[in-house]
Length: 91
Figure 1 (cartoon, rainbow, N blue to C red):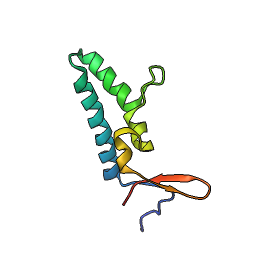
Figure 2: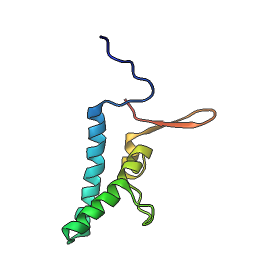
Figure 3: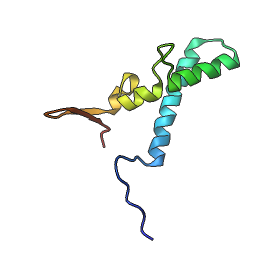
Figure 4: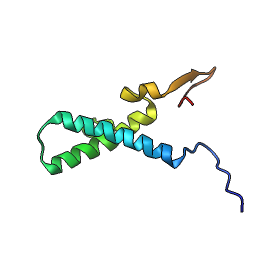
């Protein structure tokens, strides 16, 4: 049976894992800069900085990665079209 055709944008699972690892690494780096914390505080800090927390105005590393903001801005190129702009990963 031939493989199913994918529709829309799909990234290989290995690429997705690499993106997740990059966001996790930056979150860990932010945690390291905080200094001494309890284990519960560390877990909460990592969760909030990886996923984001709107009530505390924390933008998650995943959102920043997907939008190409902050430390992830170099991963993306922006092509300006006539009606809209599109952001994509360079290949």
